[in-house]
Image (cartoon, rainbow, N blue to C red; front, top):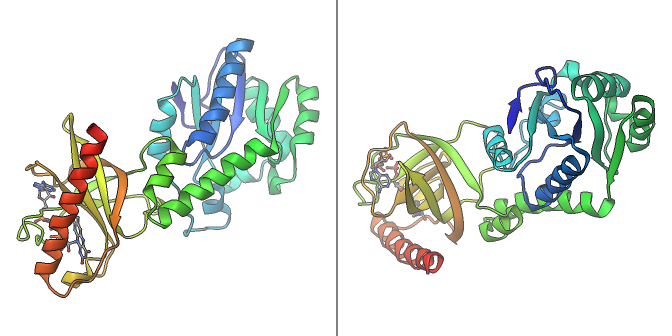
Length: 311
Ligand SMILES: Cc1cc2nc3c(=O)[nH]c(=O)nc-3n(C[C@H](O)[C@H](O)[C@H](O)COP(=O)(O)O)c2cc1C
Ligand SMILES: Nc1ncnc2c1ncn2[C@@H]1O[C@H](COP(=O)(O)OP(=O)(O)O)[C@@H](O)[C@H]1O
């Protein structure tokens, strides 16, 4: 797959089939649309292109800082990279870009830059300044500029929208099992390991604190989770706590993981951690001893869960 940082930097020689969307989550519904794109590219001897935008339009137009996405942009790229897509264009969504008229968008981006012969798009897709053009307008432009428009039905669009919404909801409720089912892979968090208060080691449970850079990344509900990561080519399992550590008087939200059968310095390292299942809610215990007992029970539970994976 070739990556392009804007539509302008796309310089394909062949004609293309293009689909446009946010693809947050790159979940099973998105995969179905990408499969359609790939089949169409194959059958028509076209190159397949996903045109996606970043930042999310709502971040730019409504300055929405509350919006939370299932994937960081780096994660979205990596997930799409794993498909056999020919081109991924992550076009910067700016105020200027949002002011392009529908016809300017079609002519300059789809026709001149992407050489689109076909566009696969949702029945309810709106585009251009103030989103005032719809799929019928796109079909008219198609006649004028010589490209075909393939409509994704209401049912298929609803499936995709519903599953993004359902995944966000499941994550916010801590229902990782359900989120992972819709995703078709395990939800992940990426970040750098930072220093905490150094208490974990005293409890015999050193925990790598993950600093997640992207403020728009959705963090699942507080609680304890069984997790997995690849550290230096080795698969390691662990248990993660997302929370404020109320037992030791914490206040900021932290994401910290104790890895099983592992003893290495992780400070400043980048980790990608997959969440596999939820163990329990975070609690304020009466004492540190009670917290340590709970962590021992979490470890027992987690290791049994991991055995079922590897059975
Ligand atoms: C599996 C696991 C479960 C945890 N559960 C709780 C909890 O229920 N309540 C709580 O206050 N802290 C909980 N913690 C967080 C500990 O308080 C925290 O790891 C400890 O304070 C170390 O912090 P430090 O990394 O800043 O040294 C949990 C940590 C882990 C790894
Ligand atoms: N099994 C392990 N799981 C997690 N971190 C570990 C483990 N073994 C060693 N470490 C190291 O210990 C650090 C965590 O120790 P801890 O006492 O909790 O300090 P801090 O409060 O700075 O996180 C991790 O960042 C990592 O560098």
